[in-house]
Length: 199
Ligand code: GLN
Image 1: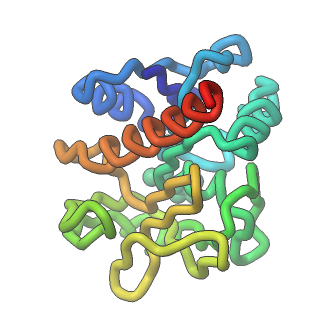
Image 2: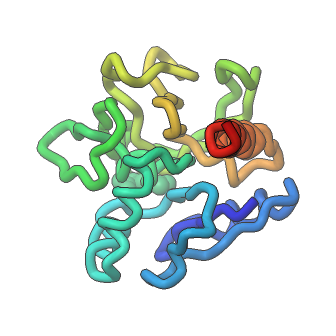
């Protein structure tokens, strides 16, 4: 299984390490040529959404990645990556791929002191250690998406078909269950694809 990891900026190395531990092949996406047809899914890491948004445009990666996700490519997005996926953002903040039926609040826990850890249930996974770093949260979830986890009444993980988004950083813990969940999502998509092809 080949999984692209957007590697323009931010916490991409930790996602690549998590994939390696699970036996999946992580492919660094640094330029247009890296985003090729052989990829089964993509990870949008944490970092700085404004910087990643700008680089995506400059490197002409924006349209191909958006089109692939819109066409059903599985995506795991964490923290800034979640901001890239959201259809709506509070306080007139910019939106980017705008594909997931959620509203995001950037830097929702305060800009400097907004880093913390907590353990909370994720639907389908169970209690999970969550690391938040100047994190957003999802302030509302539209009918196409559903909530997977909340912390203090705020949504911190959600799913919409091929899209999985977390406000926290699963790649910064030793717990690989979010990445395993994502690999299972990809396996299901591949199984559906190939059943159709052979039918
Ligand atoms: N505060 C960052 C942003 O708004 C996200 C922080 C992170 O990814 N850890 O893009």
